[in-house]
Image 1: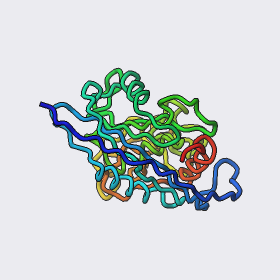
Image 2: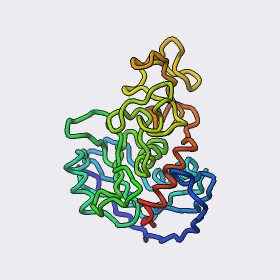
Image 3: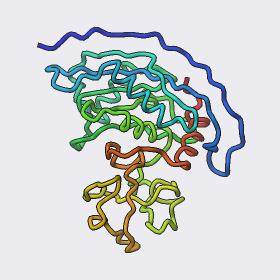
Image 4: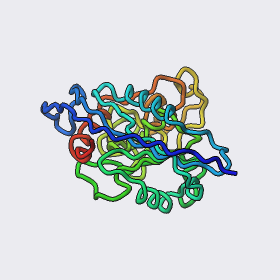
Length: 275
């Protein structure tokens, strides 16, 4: 028999922020700015019928957001949980992208805040096993005001601060370091770093499929590194970058200066409506 979880509701706190109006650089905001912005987050946790998945409590979410705030501290940005709700919606606890996500967001969305939906598993229509989470990528222009605009979806099995920071990176306009489909293949020699891959020049080109090598001291073991077909050069996989495929590699995870610049710009343009 399914456990009946109480619904915990907390009032949303609208937090005013002090915004710096320093000049942008040629493309993005300067990460030397202190944005002094707190983003409000509401968490919706879908419960599973047999309680087989790891419970995601309010304390777990708050602790994760505290760590995420550390990841964004270079630009004085943090995240505050202002509502936590458990949803006894067992049918959609196995959340299929393109079907259940739209239904869930239509039912439970709160506008102008980040809506974090956590399910036992998140799958694509394919489906793809092991899918950890996703969000609609932010842009410099405001996205259409749909139910999914401010929705982040994460699976319980890989819920962590690092995974949440990765998805928030996408939400604020970043591509993964291993991106190839949207912008083409980034060359290891860096010659097209601004127009291909993740469009960020201070992250090295990453393997499109991820490395199969073992990790030691936050690096791929030397004799297991792969070469890029296009250049013949060896990949320097950015294992310690929060937008890589290695959020739990054990090393200190971080964003780069240019990644902060891009996110700051999106925060001040396409995502400026957020509380």
